[in-house]
Image (tube, rainbow, N blue to C red; front, side):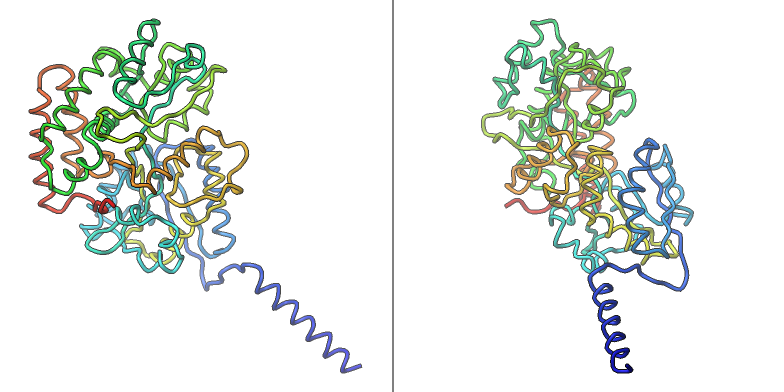
Length: 447
């Protein structure tokens, strides 16, 4: 009898060991901590999706860590005031690596290298993405949204007239002329909600006319920004903008919903936008018709520039405040959520265009309801990056002053008060000063 009891006890212990070994166990700690995370202006449904797909799964594994999320419409301005005095959040969401680099240089961000390696994130995220968050050899920020520029167009309208997305300059002009001949606006745009919208278009013309290799040379100080190839790109952009885009008198008063509604109702055929545009086309407020949309890479604007390619960038980054009293817990959370593929995959459905983390998401994890055009966009972006067929967005690689001039100065070019040459000359002067000061984010060598 005693022997049987002992055998049963041993069998029970073995089952317990097997269960504990096979199933992830919550991390137990002596006391609970609260980590604060401030978000930019997002909708309540998007916050709820974030909590359901990332925060709650994390808190199940780490029950002693509570994530406190709050929304701040003027987040980036608030951060600039709060971080230096220690009243900011534990988790720092910035608008890009250049801003994160400034905070890191000021000693306001904690290095994340050991947490990234411990979580195996260095094996999941492309080196290009991690390089962007590096300052003086240490990683201080990780991309939350890896994005690229392209064209979203009304596919139903294109199908009706037999139009195809352009792949080169000749096709692009012919397409815009054909659209214009039908009394339809070729390209809709507006910047009343976000003045830096201007730089989206500067970005594509620089990359698809001058070419990614020349933009790379300029970013690394090997070629001046006022070189003829860049001036020619801006001159072409000005002419296209005045001939085929939203009229200059309407452009400053149009909202993003205005732009997308024009596409959906066939008043316009295309818009030039980044990955975030997929968050709009799936919203009936932005796209109120049954017409279908589609996406295509921006065309090559010069024979020497290969097609297809995409100008890539980082929309937002995640960091940890150096002044946080819970750096370990905050860093653990950041690296965990960025490597949680199932949660990221679900956000492709619930918050498309925002959580495009630079890791490979297995096909089987992507919910069936995710728009097939969006999936194609993500796959194309990843494939082109892997092939080295990518360019550079201005908001990712320019330092603050050059970035400001990029989107403010182009308005003077449109209005004719400044030549393309003078615009790029001032751009170059500002950039060279910021480059010498070490303010330009790292640029990975091109293969």
